[in-house]
Length: 587
Ligand SMILES: [Zn+2]
Figure 1 (cartoon, rainbow, N blue to C red):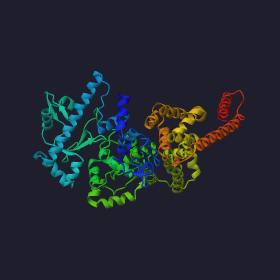
Figure 2: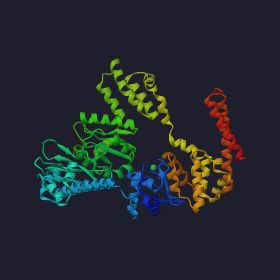
Figure 3: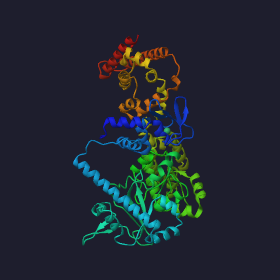
Figure 4: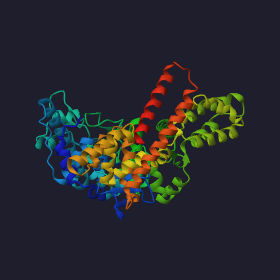
């Protein structure tokens, strides 16, 4: 439900050319009429990311992403459509006045604005104390003791809350920021006697931000052994623990470039990796990993590494995380540290090279789970074997990669000394729905690239005279399904203004998958240079006719197998009839 008027969207699109916008993220090189670069949305070494500046659209032949400039920003910045329009509007200096907000909406935006200002002011205040003020000395001493570099502390927006009851409350008050609103964010608390006092006192503070780097809360650590060791901001209208990963704003670019992400548990683990130059790192901080976290990371990374503490709790957290990765089909590996170490202690004592070494010998998470299970269970007897198999079977079922699944079945059978058939039998039962996802969508796409309908559409995109031919011949005689609307759109754009607004045509396509497929079709039109359009059109038409004939034959064969008079029979008859009509129109 965008509140942005269409003409504003068009204005932004006209000013924010796709080449300009993408160039901010990707090093593009001219290649024919297109520009080519390394895809910023997935990690790759050979460029498959293509921008068609004439059509104002992009497509990646590696990961399948494609669309217009807004689609690019939505993926790149993790924004919704209206957010991406506003993001680019700001950049190109288009003022977007949404339709006048209702009183309720206005109250709500003002409130949010105030909350954001309070948190940004607080973050600024705490960082200032840590970096420059006398009050911040205990924090600086503490960081020094833990060998934390102040430059990294600054980049990660660390702060210090002085050992006073009212330093933040007074700071906010001076800036006329309402303390009752600050209370809902958990940075101050209400006194019984009236007035407010600071929540965080004598604590080192970690600024928790959203993916765009806006402060949404704090995590505060004591400097000694007092309890609680960590005090985190409570949930608020800005801070939703199950969705936030600490450090994502600093990490997202690197995660995209590398295609991988390290997940650690604590703030200091994050800091240690960050300082060691590992930028693709996020921390869960006080909450267990959730399915929303995994879904979010999936947008940026192809593979995750868990680097949790080498103790019982760390292992439990690792296995809990594994369930989510299996659920979301995210390849996951576990980086194992020597017993008793956490990432912070390990990197600070052994160095980053030793850490890299541990990454190199990391294990697939499921493999680790399986070996651990065998170690914890006496598999020398039937009871033990059954127990292990019962644990593994439901998880094997979740694997969508059938090679991986088969290899694990082999390995598990070998280790346990049971027949593969036993395990296959167990996980085979629910196998049928899974095999659906084995049909790689990319393969389907490839096969369809030679589809005459697709070819005809790309020809229409390249040559106005083909648009005329299609129009003369009748769109519905050449295209089927959703493509009818696309072809009709192209014709009406040409009729109206002699130019085709490709982003708009793509925007009308409902399914994201189909939209990306079409983007590929339209971006990649270099091979259509200098061809005889009449000949190409005729070839497409004939191929369509042949296909119709083939379909008709296949339907006729199917017709012979169903019960005459049944619903399926009538349906098939209807389809044959319409193909026959289509064919007769073509000839
Ligand atoms: Zn890509």
